[in-house]
Length: 78
Image 1: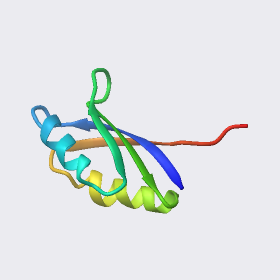
Image 2 (image 1 turned 30 degrees about the horizontal axis):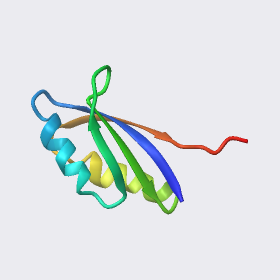
Image 3 (image 1 turned 180 degrees about the horizontal axis):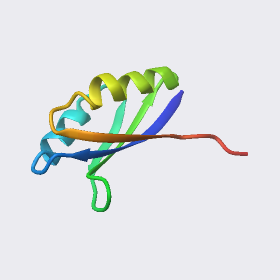
Image 4 (image 1 turned 90 degrees about the vertical axis):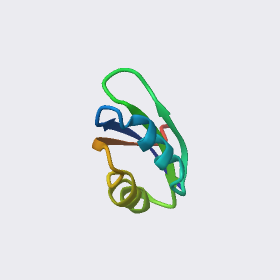
């Protein structure tokens, strides 16, 4: 199992719609509007890093109003 947090910027006025669409993507555990440098933080899970990458590129980035993403993969530390 792999997990990541995706930091998303959205076009003005598009944050709410984009967040609702992200919540419908299989593997998305949460999608929350936040203040600060990013507009939405998405927690996603998948079988592996490849699946996470595919979700970000083909599903999250393709949502109308999404202007930029940064993916932060969760790592296990000893």
